[in-house]
Length: 238
Image 1 (cartoon, one colour):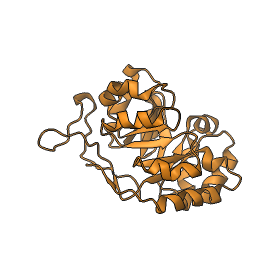
Image 2 (spheres, helix red, strand yellow):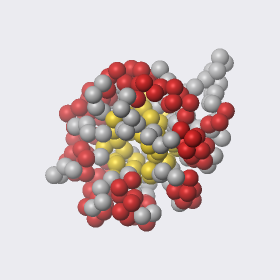
Image 3 (cartoon, helix red, strand yellow):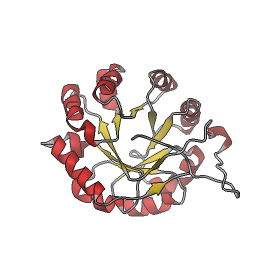
Image 4 (cartoon, helix red, strand yellow):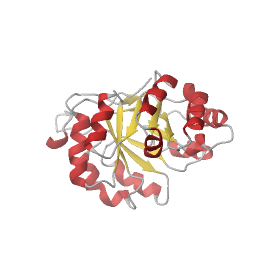
């Protein structure tokens, strides 16, 4: 269980090619037999968040620590998540080079950056993550029209693009699919939408409020997992 990453950009011989400034130091692969379920924790009520994580840890494949939780709890939150989910990859949000450096020193498997950060800063932070061989997730939640900025995503070429489920979602997915960058779906989606979302073959579904805000978080996670298991999507990125 976990992440096995590769960006699918190739040259004419089928060999990987990344932009020179963002080239990955290792030929890693991100491949999975089915879409992953990643739990997003991002509320300042840390005790309740940790309680939710304990309830559903066996039902999720990875855990993400969002900026609000990180701000409320500090870096100590990572150790607590590790204790709760010792066998799950952990990805954490960052906004500065210093934060990225701290997270990588703590051994997180992934770093999430907001696409709203300035390009010059992103071009500095992305290689900083790549040089350690860790995963770089680029979150497009604050971008009004992700499809209109395709050239930016092509230039950055992250390991994963996080796409919010909102208006114009179908058109966005159709446009970004041509970049051949693995996609994950985040935002305010519902349990009922899971089969529909899986039709677009995402690498991951990132579940925040649909689990953490549920009256019975475990039941919500079980419902998501059940729908994922009856709608398997064979995927492999090389």
